[in-house]
Length: 435
Image (cartoon, rainbow, N blue to C red):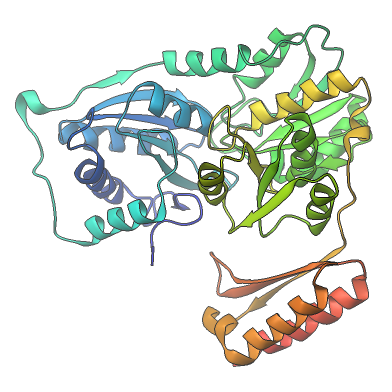
């Protein structure tokens, strides 16, 4: 069982274990032992706009150099750029310093292998074993010390890759763009203007502590209100590291990741769409009505990416806004996915509100505090979950899972009848709460 790596890398409060200087050095050592023996001995490092990013960037770079590994510092870049550039630069590993949608006090470390893919379970477990064990490398000295290079060409390469992927002949759309004071603050507004869109850019002035602060993809209501107040055609919001996107139509109504998947399934002529267990049952019904296979995975865009690699599916994503288009890269890219929707909107000639392709089923959620999260595996709890799952079969879904961050069990029920959903959620809550 992994203890340090969560759904998306290692994450925590900056300055508290494991997001400490000493841990970063140990992680760098483990990465060198695992990935840098027979490969390029190059690591690339990107970061978002958090105040702690500089500190973590410098200690990671120093640690890698002390073991004879060269480092390219990319500066402030979105997470998908690190994924793409790890493969482009033929690096042993790519490191993205970010806590994604979390507040500025948190930070994290996302790792990519030489193919630009997030590490799998086995690789993460092996790194944890090295960190916990006694294997170590002596610090290199003299001519074996690695070099640090500030390389802004990486961001330019990513920008050009995006630019060369789209041609907008008559981009007659006014966009409100919310960069969440994060990684896309300096890139997305300029790129959209270069494409010819009229852009109202907000939350594009990061100061180290305002990332994700009442803005961006984590605050869709704010996006919707801004769209209505400004009278624009489309709203587009990213999270702090740019791997998520949420849209709003001209009326301020939100198009989340499920709606974006429905749109792109048709636009990209997908025969299979991969989402997680959290996607709304309405998406599943819509895709099946169009003859499109729908596959669910555990939570996390890494799980989606792994399934897409196995099946060859070209589209996958999460309700939260991670959208993966396999032709571009196998991690979420908020800007690329948003531009794909704009491309389809222009071709359709309609309004953004006309892209809402299904109505989500009603949902009821509960967060049940528990002393032991393994209660979900207790016979009476498992039997109840099975009973209610069967009851909803074909007309809804039930998700019961231990929280990854709290001593709690999360319950989510979807279906046509809200009173039935509440009944099921309440019954399961009572069972889970029993000591």
